[in-house]
Length: 136
Image 1 (spheres, rainbow, N blue to C red):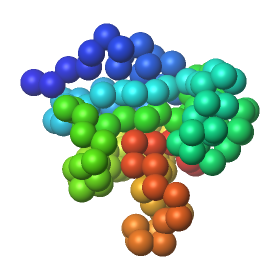
Image 2: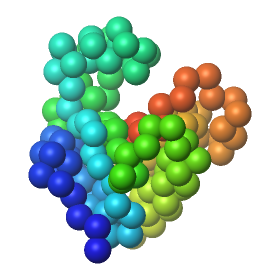
Image 3: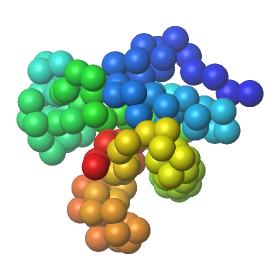
Image 4: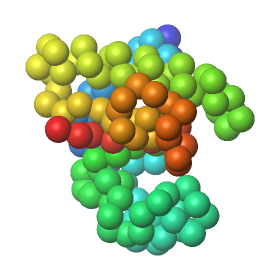
């Protein structure tokens, strides 16, 4: 059975309880790594400057405590395997939907591969496949 590394656990514990519940359920079925939870000002500025984020500090949901966003990727990590990241996002969304229907979480999930949540991936102008954030 997959389990989180110590680094993934440390990143996830910085996140909102709903994100923790979602990904603690996901890890039971799909091995993954939590790359980022909360981002400091320096980390957010670096992500923005490198083009990994479209917003500067403190506008990212990563900049809140607890973090309202996490970056999570399938393990082992292959940044070029975008098909696997899309497949993974579908599993994450399914689990999040089920948890919300069961009243185990209060938020819905938004994914960086479908920012407008219309299930159409071709209209996305900024791909951020690892990014998952809470929305009402």
